[in-house]
Image (tube, rainbow, N blue to C red; front, side):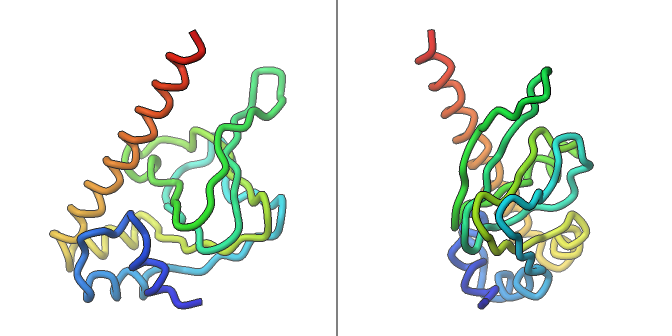
Length: 148
């Protein structure tokens, strides 16, 4: 897997320079999942974001009775896990591999290291995360309003 190509294609890293993209590729770790494997559980401490390279993951929440409620299915070039890096809170949902999947992982420490060397690039990442969260909120609001 060519980590730099994956990072360059991700909307999360739009507007970054070639050297900034190369540094992120150095920091990123490859994570392979088998179908059904849990990437993280709702309630876990959130300190990594993941880019989907191939395959699909599903985002689910546990209902009070214990059943799982599906929220979304994600595939490349989407990313997930960024909320925990922003709000420093526990994971709001469980993510598991819907198919065999390959992911790139960047931890909070990776991003802090990146920020020290590339403050402008880090700002672009934060703006891109905000754009993504805003789009997801708008989508959720549209779904809620159409159900009434």
